Structures are given as structure tokens and as C-alpha cells.
Length: 216
Image (cartoon, rainbow, N blue to C red; front, top):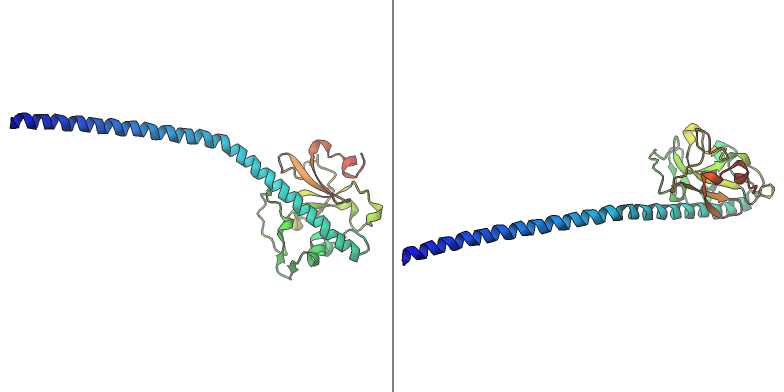
């Protein structure tokens, strides 16, 4: 009886081991299935989340432009309704500094965030010698009276402006040349600020010379 009991116990242990291995194997399959489902869902959600992030960045960028428009009004009131940017020391960034609670020194430029688009990939150091801005000013209307400008004219647009390469201004009505003056970084559209104060997202297909100069 003792020998039979030992044999029965050994068989039971073998069955228990097989059951445990089968259970572990089944659990592993379940785990792999869950991981596969998560991977599929992630592959579906990531593009959506990316688009949401890009759209959010476009909205923030447009909001920055609107703030620049609003601050510019104070500058115009103080300087005879004349647009800034007639020289290096009177570029839009320099001119609006007192109105943005930002400060300048001989060695460092302290810029507020409205000059940088969150969608911009530019990483150049921001200092007095070289800096990247996310917007570029229309060079055709520097220092001109607002009264002489078409309210529908684009005066500020999405693009990196690099002071080291003298691109803090640009002829932004030339988007079709090899040196693109406007960056359509927001899902193939660029935010553009108009003289009348509104900001609009524009595609390259409508960025003609006439359109950017306010001519329908």
C-alpha cells in the first residue's frame, strides 16, 4: 500500500507540473495577445496624437502672432504709426522689447516665448550675436506709415529669421524660390499676420505676390 501510494503521489505531481506548465503557457499567450493589441492601438493612436499636438502648436503660434499684433499697437501709438524695422537696432524684436517686459543687454538677448513657434525645430542659441526667431517681417513695408498700407497685407509670417544671415526681414512674397521665405510648418500651412490685426493660416497655393500684398 505504501508503494502504491508513492506511485500515485508521483503521478499526481507529474500531472500538477503539466497543469502548471500548461497554465503558464496559456498565460504567456494571453500576455502576448494583450501586448499585440496594445501595439496595434498605439500605432492607431500615435498619428492622431501627433496631429492633435501639431494643431495645438499651430494655435499657440497664431496666438503668439496675435499678441505681437496687439503689442505693436502700443508701439505705433508712440512712434507715429510707423512700422518698426528700418535698421538692425530697430528690428521688430528690438522695437517691441519695452512693451513685452523683456530686456536687452550687450551680451544676451532675453526673449519672451511669443517669438518662438512651438512647432519650429530651430535650435540655434538665442543671444545677441545669433538667434533664431520663428517669424519674419515683410521687408517691403519697413518704416512705412500704417495709413499707407493695405489692411489686407501680410506683414508677419511663419519662418525662421536668422540675424547672423541678415534675415530678420525678408521679401516674404517670394515663397516659390529655392530660398523659401515662408515656412509652411503647420501641416503645409503657414500662419500669417495681417495689417488689420487678424491672423490667418495660408497654404502655399494662395501665397501669390498679389495676395501677400493685400490684392484679391
